[in-house]
Image 1 (tube, one colour):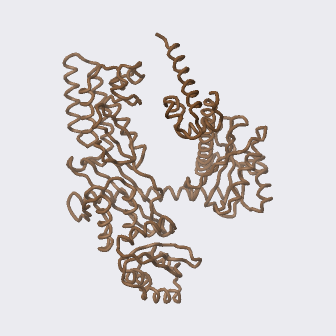
Image 2 (image 1 turned 90 degrees about the vertical axis):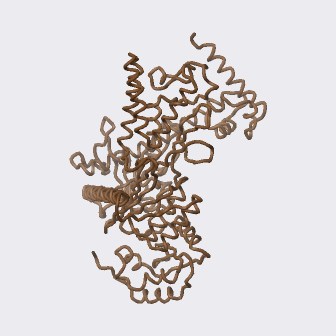
Image 3 (image 1 turned 60 degrees about the vertical axis):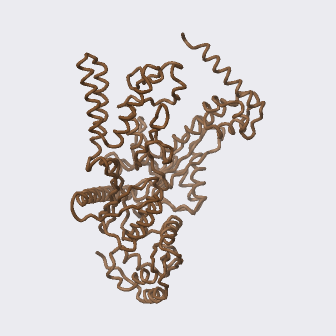
Length: 620
């Protein structure tokens, strides 16, 4: 471990200032030589906590020593209670994003599966809000993809409708959809199954989502055997497929406790390279979801920081279990603060356990093992990315290894919806918060060079964005020459190269401006450039297509007498889609700002005529 130098004079001044602090709750903000906030913390006794940083500095862990060595001043804010300090600390961390604090990377709300048992004909859906509405909620899940995967499995296994029909209103209306024809839906819309049969399938859904796999498996096996014994082979095959689908999902969930157990389990692994915090989420005795958070070498993962992180995590979650298992210690002060926060958050007592033996200790040890493996995987990826960046710098003859790379691409449909996209790679990882889109004005002709020039010029008109170490363009030597000239005109010295594709639109080489540099045999570099080229193309094309679809939707409404671009845009902004406009009543249409009763009547008449024509042409 390298020795960290300390400024003795600065430490003495900081120690004196800290010793003058009051013994009251509050928040402190550590600042570096430039006045930038590098760490935010809280304490119920400011003097004790802050002064401890500057007493025996060599007794701290490496990360804390590094932070303290950079501190030249600190501010503080007093609060009446420790809870107020905790809340203020979270807000200040989000506001200032100090480099040494661990924190959540986004403000997403977590998805649940909702079963509307209070409805006459229940449905299952994904939602991000947990309401007191009589429905059954399962989750939360850390990824929206996880929630939808379970939803699709449940729909397939229990033959649930995935359409937008409303029951019982739409029973017997229209023809059943393709899912019914393929045997993927029970066809409640046909009226061939009773309400009781339909609701019975949802009782099995609830048992399955709750974790009672054995109960569901026994029920389906019994029905399958009965059908087979009575020569109802098609029905038996349906039950068999349902069993297989449920078993496949269940095998991805490790059953670790009795069906009535639910708790969240956290453990971490930390070394000089970084820290990985892992959470397992147990519902109905099974691990239904997990999440990993990886923090870099500079981010401090001590008792105070972990407490602030967990508070921020549960501030965003709709549901808090009655029990948290923690595989790492917390100071008494932080433990009390976290317990008080969780109690206030969910309105009842939440027990914090730090298991030392038994099954719960084994569970935290398992989570810690996962954290260690995740940290090792992150380290391997970082080493691989680092090797690729070093090799790339050698191939391109760069003076420094590029930590920050920006890639650009142009997409268009003729001369319409011309879009330039920029994606950013930071230390080998995509930084989506730094992605940018530039809508390019039409020039009368399709001109990729002019479009690329406009995008790059606009990008560097915002110097508050960190400048990259390298620019990569989706294009060849001519693109490179044009953008190098532009940067020279702007007085910006950044290396520019192109990403060349072959006749199959796949990465082939790097354009240097006067030739090509082959990367075919440079596996690590090839993979990195290929990922960049694919990502910037995907990002740009997806947004160009979205703009085109929006234009098409707007133009379809403009065919109606009296509806121009502004009114079409207002209708789409209010109803979100043309189909919703189509289903709206005249009163609902007239309620939109800028839409008169005459306009509403014209829109309703237009779509009424369209429906009539569709019914008239429908095959008998």
